[in-house]
Length: 431
Image (cartoon, rainbow, N blue to C red; front, side):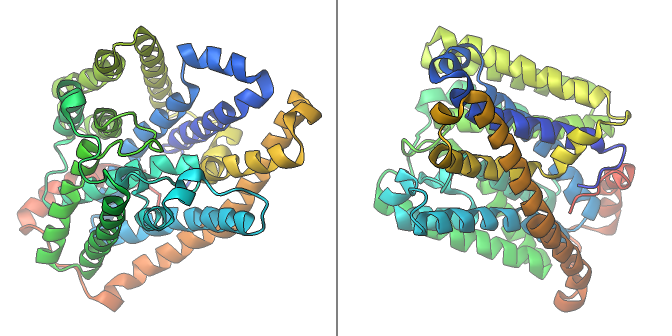
């Protein structure tokens, strides 16, 4: 995302969140595992960083989609925004494993075919199989969110963000343990079938969006909205999945829609009162639901602290959105995706080459920071940026090669739905 003054605050939040997640994984090697667990009992720094990421994505993705006003351009931009760095990380991990430098993730070793198919779509967590590295779990939420939001846009339902945010949270709170965790992926065979089916469905949706044909796009949109069923009934199919249950997966998806609600109310697309009500439901849901469904008092303490901290951080960033952000934070925001993907790879290599017990916590931490920043700069400069540039070129040529997109709705309705787009067209700069 280009660092324009009105968007720099999002870059700053993204960069900060990436650093927080990296420090969470570094923490046991610097302060010791026991101290790390003592902090975790009261405040989950990893969830804090991830939920902040989710809020930012919820704010940015609908803005990107509606700025384009084109599902074809949106998907070309998204795919070339995330897949280059993702595939680069996969390639690095595969090479390290093939060279005998690293061990494959045990979940991948157990179900290699299912895991490989799941990672084609990035939906591995909702299949019930492991990603090649742990941070890949959030990409399942990102991809599911893209599919749902694109589907809502295709059917002109994208203004219903408040209902989605509150509805997903209430479904998590009221459904709780009654929601199945492994309805679609209870056995290795079913997980392989599900992963293969999702590859076909996602590919068909993308082809439909690229075609620009109205009926095909509407069919893809309906399928995209239906992807909400994955976290609802298959949110924790195996022990490798980070979400503890389907209800928790729905809760985190609700957080993403909360970011969309903020975007909508800022641009006058929904009224403040229903927006505030929806955000209150999400906030209380995050604080209370984990405690209600686990019966563990420590969950109330942990999630109350994380939810309050995420809210305060996002509100502070939003309040300062007109201010110039520190250059260091915006740079971290630019390379944040690579930081998020590569920091555990760097950590794994350091653990073998220079164990923390040998190097000492301070030197180990400095080596980790230097290695992560260098690897992230390299991936951003030589993988992400060329990928995004290629995506922009393909966006410009898509109409020539594939033909014009058919309108999804009558001109009058289209003009009405574009009103919000005009209000932020200058701000949104991401591919």
